[in-house]
Length: 428
Image (cartoon, rainbow, N blue to C red; front, side, top):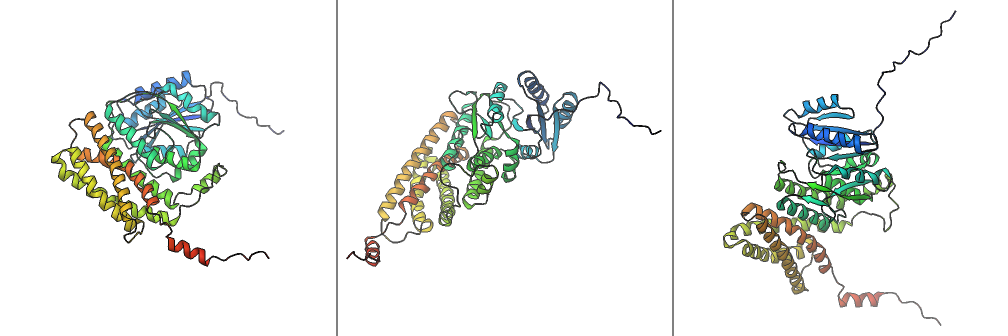
């Protein structure tokens, strides 16, 4: 007699496997032992009470040296739907890139550990992704319907940075650095291998890449209360972000980022308008030479400004800009655009002075705003603000100079073309 084996009975109290979460909210942390538990419990309560889909919280500890990791692991053991991930390297971007690329949720998101953003904005943030309307959703503090409480200095730096993005990189999103974003996980897996930054510029790089690929970015106004105890160094972060802008701009201009391939992979190759093609080699060379001239001019401007600063900030700014404007125009005329000889020299320099006046107006207003917000600002901080404001004028300078220095056909060459052009035989 053969015994038939039946499956072993399953105990009634055996835990069911956790469902695949629709949403994973990543909280990147570094040395946040003081605030971590309170923030995670608050976020978990909101997800349980207010969020209608399966959700998970991932605490991504990136190389903390205090008790942050131990607290994260204890919370993961105590609270269902919370997990802890440890990384040996610092950097918010590094943590998000690592977790998002291997996430099994359908939508990945993140928020800052201080929960500066009102969590009531979470469902409006996720809704366009759930419905399929958008690929990425970002919180924005820079629209009228947003309600923001933060210091004047941070407000000025944030608005200036986003203005630079819209001017120099043609960004179509309003707030790159708000710590409240979400995206479809399948899109994240395609984009993130091409995002290099591991720090605070990660957000900007991701959004610029998404815009060039043709992804739809939804913006959600948020209520935001700034954390007065934040350890973020505003000046150092701003400088790193400007370097990141230059790196990403160069990568896009030279075709190092496979935009066309990403469009094809993500189904965005049939966007309206002309197809994306590589930037002409001549323009890439012009941009490289223009940047070299710009760096030399900026260094000369900063040196002159610091030397003349005892005369007063506004006077030093005007004189330093005026002195470098003439040299900048001459260098770009000959070196960047290859224009030689006396033809149109006066017109070129008059245009250069027009750009100088525009740049002076931008930097003078930036100085005025800085001194109103921080009356004791001097030296290095003034120079940083002036260089940042100059980037706006620099973008206008390149576009304008490229138009002005474009070679116009002379009368002689036009006549020669008319003479040598073959004529059609007349009808007999």
